[in-house]
Amino acid sequence: MIGSPDGRPRTRQTIARDVPEFDVHDLDQPTRAALAELLVTIADDEFVLGFWDSEWTGIAPMLEEDVAFSSLAQDEIGHARVLYEMIARLTGGDADDIAFGRPAEAYRHCRLVDHPRTDWAFSVCRRWLYDLADSIRLGALARSSFRPLADVVAKIRREETYHLMHMDAWMRRLASSGLDSRVRAKEALDTLWVDASTPFARLPDEALLIAAGILEGPLDGLADRHRDMATGFLRELDLQPLGAPSGHGGRQRPPVSTGFAWLWNEFTMVRRQDETATW
Amino acid sequence: MTGPGGSPAQPVEGRHEDAGRLGDGAQPDIWEVFRQEKDGDPLRHAGNVKAPDADLATHYARELFGRRQESVRLWVVPRSAIRDLSDPDLLQPPLDRSFKKPGGYVMRDKLAAARRRTEGQGS
Image (cartoon, each protein chain N blue to C red):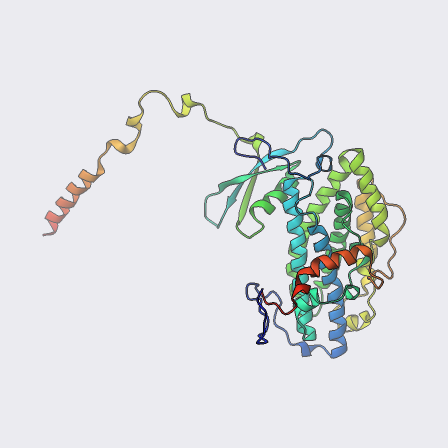
């Protein structure tokens, strides 16, 4: 690592720009702030889940799945990167600072992705619930009147469709692969189900985004569709979870969970050694 | 993945055998993967993956041979569908077959003669 004593701006020239050019002044300041808040919640969901699932690298049940699951996790971190770049454009900040420079309590990911990776069945079930939620959320954002967002989301969706197919296949395998895997899947779903709607938790300034046409309606209006789709699939597999999803208060707030405190320490460790380093 | 002879990959330390059990006594099948690097190229054998069904085989082929945008098309074929032909009686017969090769025709001399003829006509 080489420091930057002359104050040169950091460069990331090896990474192609995926965020389309746009004039931030097309949106008034409060709407910009509300949009940045929406994007942080989505980016943090992708980022945090990407890091949890990366923890399987080297220890997934079979070599092929090890490569596949790690690649999916990298895709999520890639999606987070694009969204952090867009936030940086909206707020005049730096994408790396937003991704790695915040204290643990400032991350806005939902409760569904706050759980540690636990066992393989748990990671598969959580990943499947999240990918299903993400596909519904991205579907709504693809219809956004804010063109740069709709364009970026269209690219992300093309990868997410494949993610969901992969996780559907794994859910079917867990359901059909003997008692042990069924029991583990059922336990995981029972734990996760209460948090299944948390990706759709209502945001404080959502009304501004709806008024501006950036969102077509309240986020938590998508939760019913998610629950119905998830329930339908799980009924087919005879893996109906106990209880009901709770839609409210779904974004992490202090105190930071023990699991996330550990993960935050892991993914910020290198940067914290020298925050002025350039790459 | 398996080696060229189809022998199973060495178990990786720390990998939990029971965690990867596929159930119903199903052993993962081997799928041979062919990849096309760019449109118009022939599909070349890329390697193989182990997977319990066609869907996961397709996913694994994508991850192992296409995740870095190095392919524009993959063919994923169950190894059991491949007809293996290696019988030496058919491919390496014992009798002399040199008369079936084009090497008997010495093109160099014929070309030289043809050039001499055309040069003669040109002058």
